[in-house]
Amino acid sequence: MTAKIITVANQKGGTGKTTTLLSVSGQLAATNHKVLIVDPDPQGNDATALGLSQEPGAFNLLVNHTQDPRQWVRMTGRKNLEIIPGDRSTASAQILLNAENRPLDAIRKALEPLLHDYHYIFLDTAPSVGGIQERAVFAADYVLIPTATEFLSSNGLMQMMVSLKYLAQRGWDGKLLGILPTFYDDSTTESHTTLEEITKEFGEAVLAPIHRATILRECAAEGKMVHEIDPLHRATREYATLMNYILQNT
Ligand SMILES: Nc1ncnc2c1ncn2[C@@H]1O[C@H](COP(=O)(O)OP(=O)(O)OP(=O)(O)O)[C@@H](O)[C@H]1O
Ligand SMILES: [Mg+2]
Image 1 (cartoon, rainbow, N blue to C red):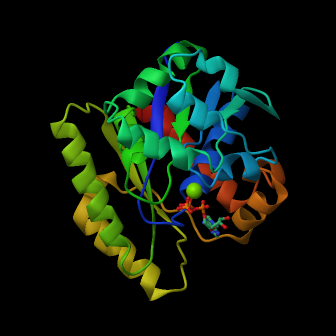
Image 2: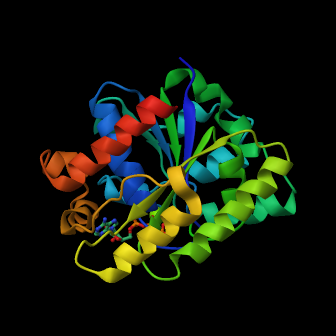
Image 3: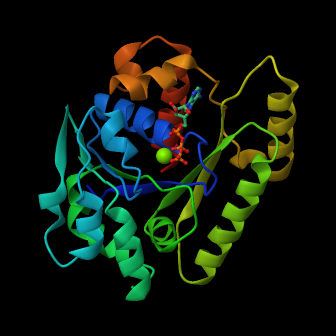
């Protein structure tokens, strides 16, 4: 097997990147796909949300890139699901990457020794623009962009599209997997209007929305993934739909 690398990105904060990455990775792992989560975001939220400790795994992956990356991989206590956790030291890796002007494919190269161990490698990203985010997208076979169905969300999307174009001109040959509308609320015109606008602009790239759901907030607090708390919840089913889309389109 050769892993497909999926980077979840949006430079706008709080759009559901981490929640999406965890919910979909969890369900892929639960259906017998070997999945690795890599968290090069200094917030280190992936480990915390899985009930694990933050560690400088991502820092080591980026800085000690000539060493075997398997040593930074941790078990998550779930079958088929492993993680290279991050913590705030990742911010210093960002500085080093920039100072050393490391090539755009630095993260892709760092992950290469792991490619045959997994079906999917998911890269989370921090809500900002910088050397790590750029290289995380450059590493991707597919990019998934969660976007909140809120006014002004299209600004973040436009910026992401500009970044993808810029990277494609520099040799990135990955694809946009899709734009995932999040925090969708049937009862607000704000949600309807933004979803309509996004769909008008991006057409088929727009995936079925994920509704606003309190359970997704509780997940992070409890250190569990949504399918572990309630396998029948609408949020679990919506992320299962996303999982099936990923299985069919990657
Ligand atoms: N569909 C949803 N409904 C309700 N709450 C959600 C939903 N998706 C995510 N959340 C909550 O919103 C907050 C932000 O989500 P999350 O951390 O996934 O976003 P993010 O894009 O990764 O943020 P950051 O940019 O800081 O990394 C979290 O508290 C999360 O539990
Ligand atoms: Mg996040």
